[in-house]
Length: 443
Image 1 (cartoon, rainbow, N blue to C red):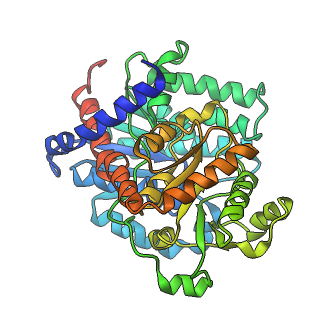
Image 2: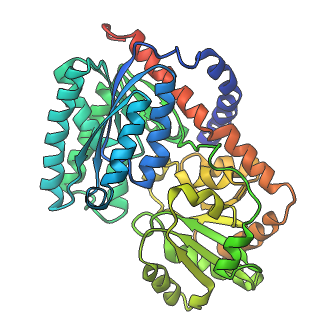
């Protein structure tokens, strides 16, 4: 069975198993007695923290686990978000979740990260001992290094929540040289974390295949689970296009192609501009809506390089709580990510959120398991390569797809089957239960 066949089979099987797993979980009691330290180098006040940390942690706490969070918050959160931090801490405490926030340091890059690693280990050990933690859950590699040390010093079991092939992503983005010492050190740590963790979580079936195929890094004692990036389906729901918003934007009569999230580095803005250009040739009233916190001049520069009119783009910064309403304005969304080996481990949050709001997606091939899912469920268009003729073909396909009367229902059904938050919480709860059951053994 090849990787694509295996992925389709796994996605279908997992979707069918979700109700049974949730019924077996006995919400509110299934994790009673589990005491976990959740360690993240990303902050709770960032959009990622709001969408990809808090919902899982709250779900696990509702299942009975005692969770202690240790996160690194960006400088801007400390400068302008102290009230928000205090309010969030009170809310978490009311749910039985403790939160320790440390300051994230940016520069100089290597010394700053080393300093954060040391502080994370010291505070992590203190929290683990003080709260009698016996499970350390690390989100991504930097947190994984901290958690590995904490687990060695305290005897807690170690869950490595792998969010992709981090070191390879940095090389492919041009941030690190391919043969540099940083890359080599990061890959050695990646192998150590995979080997020594009692459990490993990957985002994609493709990543699990890569991990299991790599003899140098293969987990010896760990059972690898696949838990895709999930979406809060109660928050992200299909809705009629907001007349109020469209009037405010003066886009009432426009066909909208939407992009949400960070720009640059891994995300190919100029390629998305060229694709939009192909759409405009067939859909003259098309307009590009970018929801990002970055400077609008980044988008405008890309448009200028492609010889396009700046009046065809609108850039807005939108709070996380307002994202569903804005996503629902779109006729389609687009996400082109830099090709490379690291794509196998990627499951972008924005794909699940877009589908949950009933919006079809246009992606380039190779993004984790997403291209297989998009094709199988007919909820978008997959571009095999980012070249001229492929842009034209994808433009024709997505315009036609957006006009199909049941496409929004299909998108929502795909999100419910594959990206529901309950599915993710059930998956993590199963891993927590297995680790708790194996405590005191080498299992």
